[in-house]
Length: 207
Image (cartoon, rainbow, N blue to C red; front, side, top):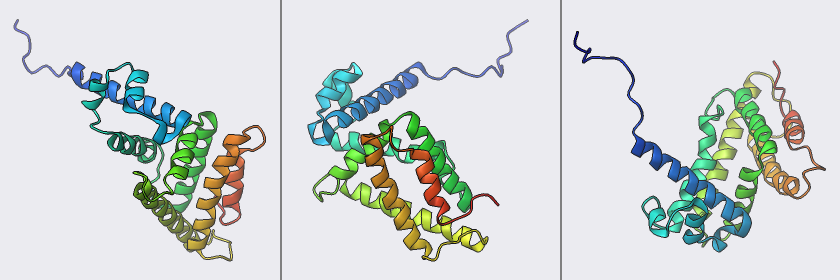
């Protein structure tokens, strides 16, 4: 009997594609580690390549310059969370719970918090390559928080006297400041419960 030419056995992923993905992830991880240690300005492409076990030329095949590597790191660490947590949910309670879940993740692995705190501080300078990126990101966070609070207000679960858009600024600003204090004194501050209790000042999450 001849083998079935229409076999449904799934094909294995391309070895080349998988290798490229793994190399890219290694470069992103190496960039994160370097930025946490010496900041963006102190990070060099050669150092990142060395940390990832690649040559400088090998890195350039994936990222042609330093700003493109930075953008890839930010996309991976900021927007990548939406692949794991329901950050695009239009349900206010679901979105807020996702933020609390992210805090639980960060409490176990503070690298994301450290990275974004360092880059966020550096990016306050208009000349920094991530300046506009962070401006847009902060605006997006405030917009989503505002929507979440408005949704919960319609459900009768928003109990603050301040407008949702002001509450969004309160929460976003508190989280940024809290992250810095937690990184400096992690044994003195409960990251997750602090964030959860602040949301409790504005909304009731349990229906």
